[in-house]
Length: 322
Image 1: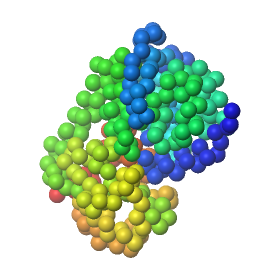
Image 2: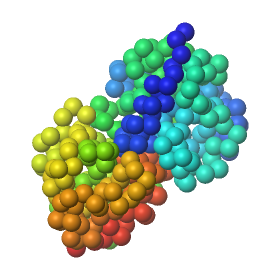
Image 3: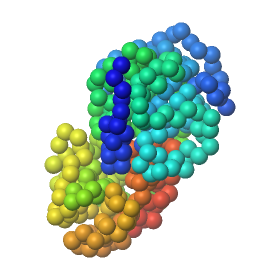
């Protein structure tokens, strides 16, 4: 078996950093039910997947799946935390929730490591796994990837899917309702957000990657607040929904609110770009310069990350609503 080596680690760092860039027994994955021999069919972006209901040995390879499991009081037997790879530490909303669980290292033969865990379900992202690796994982156990064909799944779709698989539909409804109540509360508190535009952007060198697909899971968060992506960015969305433009075109980020991050640890790098001060969001004091944890929480939203991120950007939302 060929090892999944450095390419895996490099891809994880680049893509997650760009914002795509994320009461149980310690050895099991279900908190209150015995394993079942019943199967269900789940449709993901690759087609129909037949999965044993209430799997006991789940391996999670991205934060959207991982946080959805944790929100449903379910722990994997092992996991990859994409966010901690680039941020340097586990996200605060997962603190203490994964104690005693095997954290997989991206180096070496990852498929072999996962196989040794004897999983009955593998949860993978849609942006780290090439087809040969996916086929190897699928040979080990049913392997579920992105549910939608957008760049990033809506956070609630992941929770709902796992609620069905785990037989925890009521719990899934409960946690989804809780996060939606927070979003609805913000929309009611800041009615001026209705009809306003937003941009999320990530600076790498001389290019800025922007969110341009209104169907992306990240965009749907802001849509629930009444906000939309500027049409000029939607027009250049391309196949990924997250095109890169040169820093010379910073004027195309003109909007009522800007959430920006940089590959550089220097937070002022974005502010130093020529043309930055002319942006409408800057003039409204509606700019949030995010760290890697917060920008990933917004660009790859999860049921646990989203409340954290919304608290961070609320003052910016308030200014954008004016």
